Amino acid sequence: MNIAVLASGSGTNLQALIDSAARGELGPARLAVVGVNVADCPALGRAQAANLPTFVVDHRRFAARDDFDRALVAALDLHRVDLVVLAGFMRLLGPAFLDRFGGRVINIHPALLPAFPGVHAQRQAAAYGVKLSGCTVHFVEAGVDSGPVIAQAAVPVRDDDDEESLSARILVEEHRLLPSVVRALAEGRVTSEGRRVRITGSWPMGESLRSM
Ligand code: GRF
Image 1 (cartoon, protein in one colour):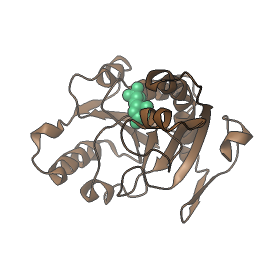
Image 2: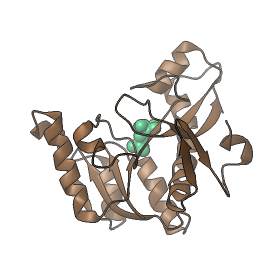
Image 3: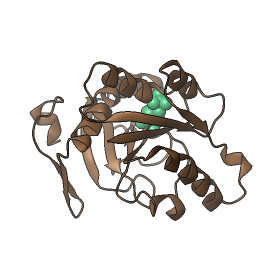
Image 4: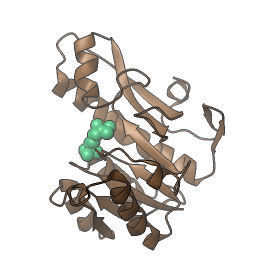
């Protein structure tokens, strides 16, 4: 299964996928290409350091979102992509993209959806005062962070947490969760019935986390 990763920032989730692949932990998933929309983002450097094919599609070059989406599709279509992983990709994708890759796009979000969708999820969670937060990997549909949940991992929110400390604790779980989901998808162990997504077979995150 050919995986494309789209990123915009530091790329630590991309790095987790690269490291998992190097350890043989992604099963039949193969990182085929990494695309970014920010030419100087660290994620691009991580992909290049891992000798992965890369492309840059700068959203600022496009007046209309559809045109940006179509440029992304054109770049991905060079690589026979089976699954698109949004790993800190900070642009919303519209119908021109989702119609092409429908049902084969996943995103990682740093909160327990449906709580705290959108940007600054960790800041929102800390400010709200929840006692648990975490991360969610979900299928991408039209709408912000609203597609069916594939898997989640929870972390405690401590009394003295701020956005930074909570983000760091969540990120540790993101780096475990995302490769686990990519592997399960590549191994054909993810089934959906409406919004309810089930992962069968082995699950390295632990049984309790699978059902959280
Ligand atoms: C992560 O917290 C991810 O959940 C969110 O953006 C951040 C990206 O981090 N969507 P990185 O670029 O993978 O380091």
